[in-house]
Image (cartoon, rainbow, N blue to C red; front, side, top):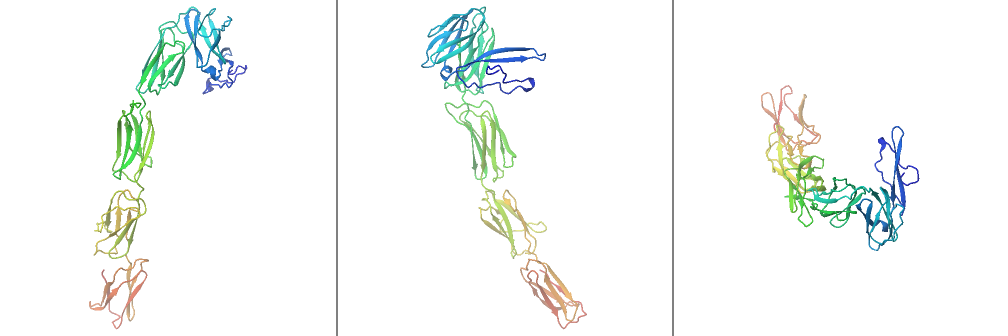
Length: 476
């Protein structure tokens, strides 16, 4: 029962324990009995009740320390904000209230739990006191240390009697801001340790009731890691991890891993860094695709870093050829500038290399290169130009300019030879000579032909023996 209305707002068992056992109280200045009831598998129940006190803003800024003096005798020391005065005390044991304006001491009638109220202008502050007349006061001391990971640790040791009333440990950072509040109860001869992570500089802990028990932990400052990237020498990638020097900058306490991936998510480099102030570490990528975008990824104690770097848009190559003599190829770049030169090779149909006017290509965006094969070669062969590298687009193209020549004859008088170019687009590039001989090897006709695609030429033998054998010969 969170709000004291007699009904249970939160009911659960072992199988459905809620993630949160918290409740918001929206009205200040109230005392609310919160009741917990536990029932076992046999149906037997037991209950416990505690009082929740909701405070106004003024009330919440004030407190008082509970100082056991031995037995049932206690003193109460106000801890007041500016402008607040004490108007009196109530001890919750039936004794008359007092009007003491400052520190008050009181002897309780016996063992028990008592609600002590400090009345202030504009409200009140209530704390519970657990009284055991047979017990002596606790004797507390505190020590502090800070680990390399900047976790401040405060150890409270009790060399006296067990604490009957909980005390509050408050931890302040170097700017005086509260970073942790813990309610502690330390048994006789016990030590408890409170850890506060991610601290820097001087961190101070103190107890409310035992106000003289304090300790300072001196922690390193956090590192200030940054990662920058750049293109170096046009085609190399560089990532620089830095931890600058400074008054409030500390070392990394442990190495942090990183990976560098390409645009497809493949890891191309990995490692770790661990930097003291004033140091840096450079990771260089060389001999890799210069048109990729590479991303540095790291997440850990020093921070989360995702830094990408590209050096240029990928070039896109197109290769064409012109049917002519000599044979020419044209390489055109429709993408980004080529950052690296790429080799050019030209092979004939038998995979023999062919000499050309250029053996490499490196084009700015929008530029072209014409590659001419050396004169004196057969312009009709299927030459293949290739370039190998990181540029995109077409990297191999086969030149095809061969006409398809056929020769037929018609047995008639006169005898007719027909020369045809049956190719769909490939014209002959130059005239080619022919001779026609009879069975005695005597030349009966000669000439040349230079046929466009889809055309033909006839040679008619007039006045010759139609029963002889005639041979058409042409080489070129």
